[in-house]
Amino acid sequence: MRGEVVCTKEAFLRLLDNHSSRGGQHSSAQTAKRPLKLDDLTRFRNVGDPQLSPDGQWIAYTVSTIDAKEDKSSTHIWMVGYDGKNDRQITFSNDGEGSPRWSPDGKFLAFTSSRSSGKPGVRGSQLWLLDRSGGEAYQLTELKGRLAGYEWSPDSKRLALVIGDPDPDAPDPSATPAPGTPPKPPKPIVIDRYRYKQDVQGYLLSGRHTYIYLYDIASKKLDRLTKSKWDESSPSWSPDGTKIAFMSNHGEDPDRDPAAQLYVADSQAGATEKASDHPGQSREPLAS
Image (tube, rainbow, N blue to C red; front, side, top):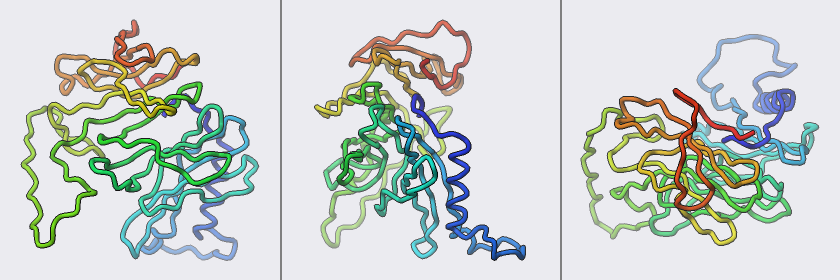
């Protein structure tokens, strides 16, 4: 995620020190050194993704832990004052949360979570909003595809979402099979691409892409930014909110030539993207 204000090195080091002490990784009473044991893994608290609030007073960040009894890891969002005080956990679901991002006006803290909504076809990670004036977090999106990233618009009224096409053959997690009904066998995976697999995403199948969408918070309307047929990623808003820069590979065979290029489009549905004049391979854009 780009475009947001991140916390300073000194503030982040304080977070690391606070959570290391909580997990018991170092203590003044513990002086004898010993080899690392497997049980020690459950005591580690991995701190990451610090995000400084627009007013500079708060830091939202993630803490990941391992639950040995449940045999799974979980990540939750914490918040602490910039002075290191009032450190507290603010999300508690069993499904975990991640990617905290402040709205530019400071009124909301957005995050992703796979909490179930119970609605047919809605699966995977969704976007949630926590109102800083109080109240419970509420689910903002009901996406059927895979949410790969998001960016607030400068006026805090819209979001640029990076969404992967849904798998038409994936089972509906909210469906309840009839008693005694055997599970439906999965369809075979057809590999017909040179680059057929990616960490986290899994198999990359032909005909399924990742595109940038515009999401209006007030109307909850979701529209594609462009009409291109190529994968898109790493959206970054211009300071005035009128344009979005992003990465895409328009080559004849992107699998064999993975170098992405920089494109810019007006921040409206169905916009036509324009390639940057910068030659060669580009990386994640950040508007000045």
